[in-house]
Image (cartoon, rainbow, N blue to C red; front, top):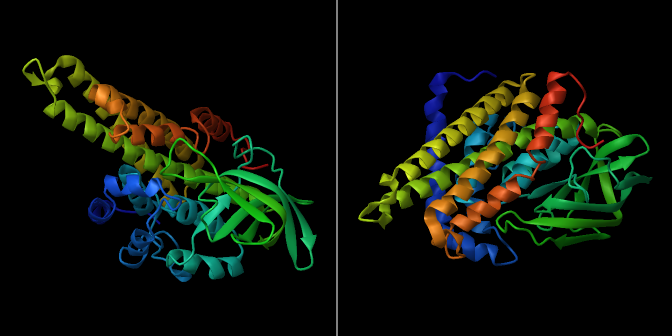
Length: 379
């Protein structure tokens, strides 16, 4: 559905509401405390995000208990979460798993899981990647029929919130090809091991499956188009997350340049810093334009989504890494210390560069789209 310019203030109000909420309920000091524990996200904050703000059901269709908003609104929320570095099940559950379920044609699964995800009552994770970390790699996890269901054998890696989610949406291979399955996060035969990662605000896990019971989503061999669509939309979300982090790094740089005195004046008064900040501002604005255009295409469900998602993901991940690095440089020695927040954004930026593939992967998908070649995720 097309969105008009009159709806812009609605998204601005949404942005202000989310930003104010995060500043009040999830300050950086609290985030630092949480990521040092085994439960990096705050259940109370998550409940408020769901019950009071309705963020968990924002983009889920209203027939499944959501608000039915578009990807333009969802991109705003993800951007603000990225700006605050909030550890939460939002990306893993609402964006990744929720999108995969929504893109399937399994009405039973949608009616069973989406309302609970929308209400914040169920956390979910999408398990696609294996040891090479590539979305378009052949799937090694096997699924064999067992009565009315299936049994899964193999492993998944780099699963966002994989050790914390209540339910897992798992890509596995049957005799007919790549398929999606629903797995209980506490099911028998499943071992979930947290991974040591650079970015502690975004936990990941390795999942070992040894005869784990699973229920298929839709039909055997039908996961390819669903995962391709999910990958495109997840790439837009990753770009929005990177945009939020880059914007915050730019704000930190400008603030420090205006308050740090050297040779009797703020360092922001020196031409070298002025030029650096101006260049960073341009990069962030280019990133914002890319995210907004890709989110609009997703909201309108146009054929340009794969192209614009790839462009946004490639540019925004590189922009985030650049701005996060320069933020440390502008802060000087203090920027390298554990006590300063600049290092947390730098780590998020570096991890974001490979979250759904690096810039080269996204550019390959852009090229494939322009050449009208198939580029299925998870073969």
